[in-house]
Amino acid sequence: MTPAMKPGVKRVGILISGRGSNMVALLEGMRAGEIPAEPAVVVSNDPGAAGLAKARAYGVATAVVPQQEFKGKGRQAHDEAVAAELDRHGVEIVCLAGYMRILSPWFVERYHGRLLNIHPALLPSFPGLHGAKQALDHGVRVTGCTVHFVDAQVDHGPIVAQAAVAVQPGDTEETLASRILEQEHRVYPLALRLLAEGRLTIEGHRVAVAGEEPGFPQAVISPDPGDPLASR
Ligand code: GRF
Figure 1 (cartoon, rainbow, N blue to C red):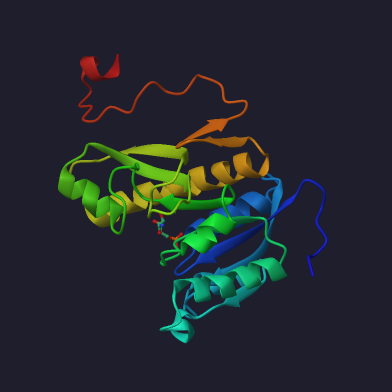
Figure 2 (cartoon, rainbow, N blue to C red; figure 1 turned 90 degrees about the vertical axis):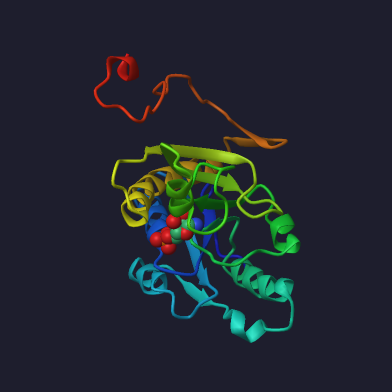
C-alpha cells in the first residue's frame, strides 16, 4: 500500500550505515519546510547504526535489512529487500547518507534520476573511502564535498551540487573532515530541495538546474596569506 501523499510533496527514503549526521540535516531541512518533501523511512544495512535512534527521535519510520542475512545470495537480493521497504513506505526519492554498501546495477537503474549520494571530496577527485585523508595526502589546497546522482560506478554520477573547503595549515584528517562535514550539511538539503522541486535535468554527465542564476563567489583561493594578489 502506498501511503497517502500530499500533492507535490515527495516521499524520501534515506539509507544509512552509521551516525547519520547528513540524514539529520535532511530531516531538519524537511521539517523546516524548506524542501517540498517528507521523510518516509530510514533504512540501514547495519542494525547497530547510531542514526536509527536519531531517525526515530524525529518520528521517522525505520527499517533494518541486515546484510549478514544475505551472505552468499548476491548484492541484488539485499537491494531488493531494501527496495521492498522503500516501496512499503511509498518512497519516490532515495538519499544515500553514509550508506556503506555498493549498490547493484538493478537498484541504480530502478531509482535512476531519483537517487542521490553525498561524498566528502570534490568529485571526480578522491572517490572511495577517506576523502579528506586522500585530499591531505595529495596536497590539494582546496577540497570539499559533492552531491551527485548515483550511477553504476562508485562516487561517479552526474554532479548536482558542490561546496569548496580550503585546506588549512596544520589540518589533520579529522579537522578537515569536520569542516567538510559542515558543508555537507548545507549542500545535501539544497540538492534534495532542487530535486524535489523538479528543477534538475540530467544531460549526459551534467545536471542542468532550472532557475540557476549566475552570481556565485568567483573563487576560493588557498593559500591566502592576506596577499593582495590572492584577494583582488
Ligand atoms: C559523510 O562524510 C558522507 O559524505 C559519506 O559518509 C559520511 C557519512 O556521515 N558518504 P554521516 O553518517 O552522515 O554523519
